Image (cartoon, rainbow, N blue to C red; front, side, top):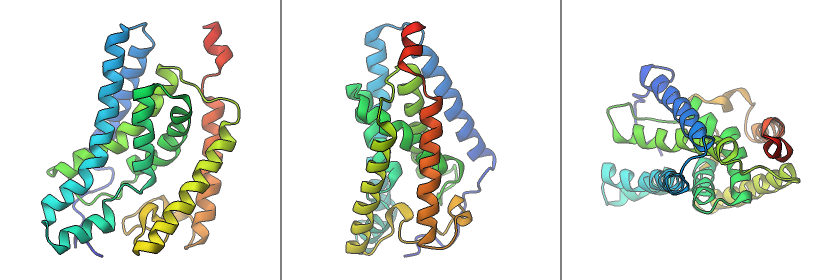
Length: 242
């Protein structure tokens, strides 16, 4: 279903560049703060605030769709088509939010890999149809900028580190996501995760071959990025000697 005839959002225009720069600066600030031996009560509030913002961004997507397109049949069609939390970015945001709430190692580990290897693609090449004059623009970057910020904060700031077997677990989680969401797409006739077809907007998918072969390319790139991210993540022995 075509939601908008035109795409006001322009990749790498000033608003997009500002959103990326703001995300980078935020990641640096919160990570440096966590490394500065802060008051634990303030640090907990920061974790809860960051987690809550991620969940709010995910929850607002269908709400804003209904606000824009109404509570009638068309509005609910838009929600079903594009606003349910089945994209990898949505799942990564939810995992990262609860990793922040609970300081959970397993959630932080997969959230780190998905947040950087996956959601970062949405930050750099957004499938966004709204410009900076619309609230959807800010909610989109709250999530797609916030997830990488949270991932960096958890690993380099709070030092909740990936453990042995992280790569194997990440592959398992990724294949599980692929199987579950492709099944959901088949049942409801949609294209969440862009697993059943490429997005209309220009993205990195355009350089990965036609469907379904780009799914193989995508997995290969994802696993390569997982390996790199695990390689550059701090190690327990490094943290212990710091």
